[in-house]
Length: 401
Image 1 (cartoon, rainbow, N blue to C red):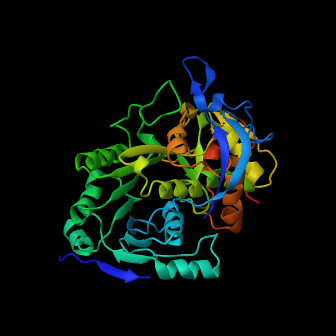
Image 2 (cartoon, rainbow, N blue to C red):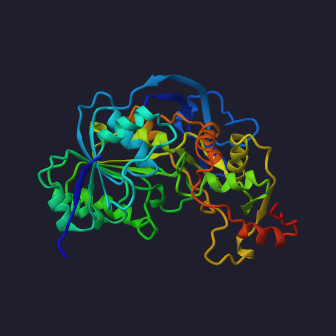
Image 3 (cartoon, rainbow, N blue to C red):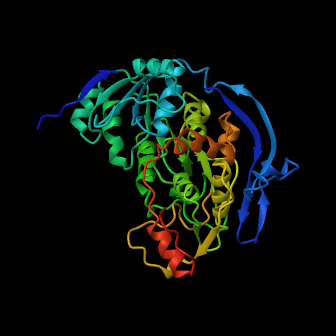
């Protein structure tokens, strides 16, 4: 069958001063990083949420433009039609870059997001371009991309190294390849948070991301790799905050595995998009890897409480259980991995003129107000595993109204 591709035309940020805390299980205590040591007060995200494990001076500086000094670029974005990509593509267009999205063409190229006005959406939809093509089809990619003059690639949906090869073959002279990787590539460690120089795990489910980074190095491409932790915010297609919001809305107890003091980290999608913009044309980002997430770490229990606060709901009842006591089959009883999982963002803060805008509760409120509360969540509520847990632990199983 002949290869075919089709071509169609179709933010300012507040920057808070913040510090991080390194958690050492070996020492059994919380150790401040050098950045956090400079800050005199270690504060909670909110008095109610029980969210801790970070330091912050709590100040906010004025709005700054992301990477405004970069000359307009001709950008190819792989993906760009959902979640991270829709925010990033808008930011790039607003800064004057020519953005072309490459997708298989099975979904609408543009759609309104909660922050859009009619005017802003029309401006974006008329500016962004589109190529419909299968990125795994080498011949089709060469035909579609050769001679187009793309200077920068944003690869937002690559999973394996072979996914990147057709792009590199078709665009041998690109100035920068910006790759969306994952903090899930790190080897489990007793010393936290994960840092960019830490050992990685080529047996992890994200090994394809590591192989892609290695391919880019081997091909001599000027690349930048972004490793997010858990991402949240409006339009999130992964049931992170949505999982908690469903239970809070229904007034149900929230099942949390084991002690609930497992420490993790959430980063708002808009903060992540700004970081992706900040590396564009940035000489400091050449051949570098950056962890990107929120400034603070949080416990599982703390996430549940913060979600309730963001939704304007009473503090939820938390039910702790041992996952080993249950056979959930293929069902997922909790939306996060049952372990400590968080990363240092010190390097990005130091080198990219970037810091997260959103604190945890205000970021969750942004997600709730602009998405879940409007009934635009991705999945319907399913309390099957919750009921299994509650019944086994002797709790009264809520009935549907």
